[in-house]
Image 1 (spheres, rainbow, N blue to C red):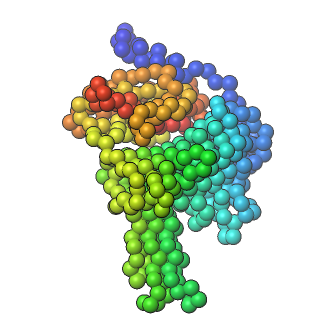
Image 2 (image 1 turned 90 degrees about the horizontal axis):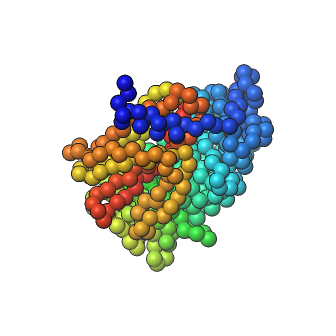
Image 3 (image 1 turned 180 degrees about the vertical axis):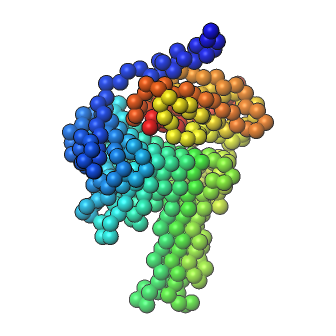
Length: 407
C-alpha cells in the first residue's frame, strides 16, 4: 500500500512531467550524430528543440531561436575560428526559453571569444559555463531575464538587464603596468558592472564571489600605481541584491605599487543618486559612494540543488533561512518575473505547478527536500524552483531561483 502523502507526491511529480514534443538532435564532432558542429545544428533546429552535444571541439555560434543546448559530459569546447563570436544569443522573444548547459568557451590567440546576450525578452538560462579566454567581458544588454548558475566569468557587464548570478565566481582584469612612455599603472577593472540604459540594471548575486582586478604597478617610485577594481560597480540607479554565506566574498582588487587605493567591494558611480544595494550573509570588503544600502534582518533565504539532476534519481534541495521560519518549495515548468514589494526584495521567479511544504527551519538554519525525478524525463527537460520563506505574518520572502536541467 502506498502511504497517502507518498501517493500525493507521485501525482505532483507526474503533473510536472507532462509529455514533451521537442525534437532531440545529436551534435558530435567525431561524426556519430546528426550534425558535426553547432552552427548547422542551430540553423536546422526548430524553436523548442534540444541539441545534445557530445564532448569535442565546436565553432562559436549565434543563437537566434529558443533552443536547449546541453553538453552530454565535460569537454564540450566552443572556440571561435575567427575574431568575434564565442557565443551570442540575440533577439529571443518571450515565451521562448534558451538553455546553454555545460559549455566551455575558449579563445585562440588573437581571436577573443565574445560572450554576449542581447535584446531578448525570453528567459535565458546558462548553467555550468567555464570561460577560459582572457578577454573580453561577458556582456548582457537589454535582456529581461538571464539566470547564470555555476559559471566562471571575467567581467560580467550587465546593461539595462535583469541578471541572476548563483554559485559562480567572477573576476576583474588587472590593470596594465606602467611603462617608460606611460609611467602610471592602469586601474583594475570590476568583476561585475551594473549599467543603466533605457531601463535600470538589476543584478542579483547569490552564493557567489566577485573579485575586482588589481591595479597595475607604476613604472617607478615617482609614478602612481593603479587603483584596484571594485567587486561590483554600479551606475546611478542600478540595483544589486546580494545574499550569501560568510565564505562568499565581494572584494575589491589590490592597489598597484606604489600602493594606491584598494577597490571597494561595492562601488557606485560618481553621479547622485548612485547604486541601490540590499546585502545579507556574504562578506563585503567595503562600500563606496553607494546611495542606499539595506541590510535585511534576518538574512534573505538561499536555495540550492546539491548536484546535477538526472532522470530516475533524486534531486536534493537545500534552503538556508533563519531558524523558526517556515518554508515552501515552488516547482514549475515555466519561469516568470513578478516584482515584489519592497523594491529590492526578490521577485517571484517560478510559475508554480506544485508547492511542497517543507516545514519549519531547525537550529541548523538549513532544511532539505528530496524530489524524485521521473525516469521517463528526457535530457534537456527543464524545471524551475524557488523557496517561499515565511518569517512572520508580515515578512514573507522569496529565495533565488534554481533552474533544474535534466542531464
